[in-house]
Image 1 (spheres, rainbow, N blue to C red):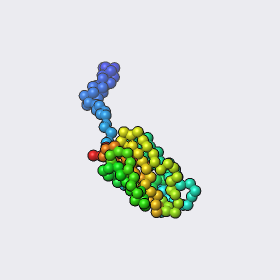
Image 2 (image 1 turned 45 degrees about the vertical axis):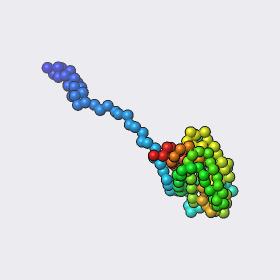
Image 3 (image 1 turned 180 degrees about the vertical axis):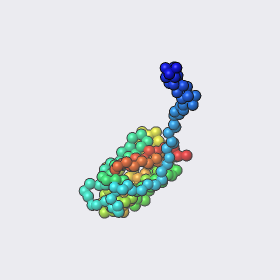
Image 4 (image 1 turned 90 degrees about the vertical axis):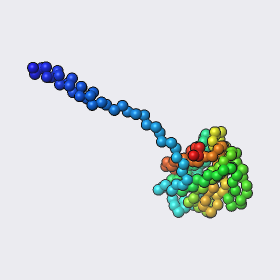
Length: 175
């Protein structure tokens, strides 16, 4: 009888487990990207201003598809993203009119820089094949505030990520 119980115990255990019902893992849907209007400086951003240097704090501004990426020498600065209908901007501080490719635009304002030196020495205009992001232009580097205009195809906003010394603006359909 003892040997029958030994054979029956694993079968009963399996039956109980099957009867309880297992849960089938369900696929989770990725969260839709959200729009960011502002962001704070990273802890490694040297506020209130980076020290004077022959190397500007913005190392590069590059585009790829619908993504604009800024690389900095240390950390990331505070930013603001301002959406607008139309792709016409004013240069800072002259107020000269700048018309970018696209039907809509975003102004990116980066703060926390020195006002007594150039904070970016790379190309002032960068183009992309989109489909949403078409053109990016530095509109001003004045009194420690850098303004960038972004020409976009259609109403758009930016999903912004910060990692190390990189700020990435992924332009998505607004709404």
